[in-house]
Length: 174
Image: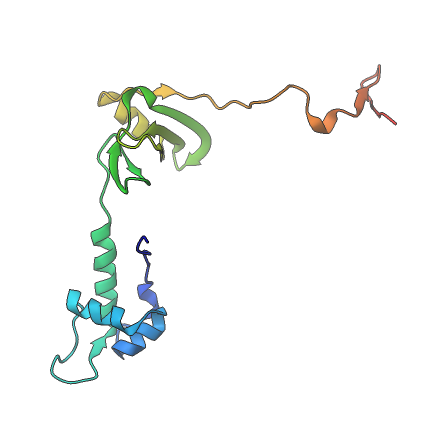
């Protein structure tokens, strides 16, 4: 069974208060042994010799922020995050495409870069801007334009009962 990843909100803790390990566990809804493992991983307590262990709120906040920062890895140009491999991967070169949308990102437009993982062949997506797409093209990455199209028949199922009259007015079938 895969280990469930948790995100702990550091803003639930007050920086100038002291907390016991069981109080920290109660705030985050976790087992107190999890907080004991945090102490072994580097969560600083006020005094290691006295029990119950007390921790300053600012130390808890810093510990949680540092742990979140350790898990993040910036992607290099041309890399995607593969959800199946759980790591940064490059796409198959012949399967890269870009779709420029009409959504605005400040001065730029949103771009969706699509690819396929070179290891597990899982579909990959990267939301970016048209400026980043130009930079990738200048660095030698071969991207093909992906046109947004609608698939299906020309007759809409909503308009099948309507006939147009001679003067352009619609008349419903009965």
